[in-house]
Image 1 (tube, rainbow, N blue to C red):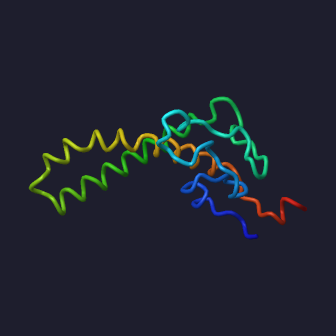
Image 2 (cartoon, rainbow, N blue to C red; image 1 turned 45 degrees about the horizontal axis):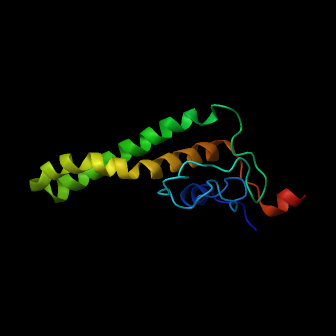
Image 3 (tube, one colour; image 1 turned 135 degrees about the horizontal axis):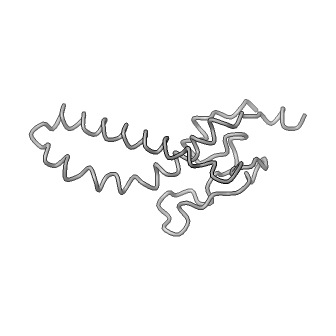
Length: 127
């Protein structure tokens, strides 16, 4: 098996080390009870998904970047294709950000950890 892809692991809730174990307990970011519950260790390879207390404070910067990128893209779409409806942009941006909060929260955490964990193939793990 080839090395896991970091982008794949960020987008599909997988461990950045093995690319197979789930990062969060639930698959859906919109599970009201468990949207923020993470596995402490990867269920597949045993990688520590919470390396130290306060590790995920850096994910706040990733989350901020995701929000800014979304708002810029959303604004550019409105300006270029729906110029006469810019009032709708102002009325819709806050609800859109609230709806996307659980998704961005989870993606920011997975991205932050993926920056610090080196992917390892199954051959390297068994050696």
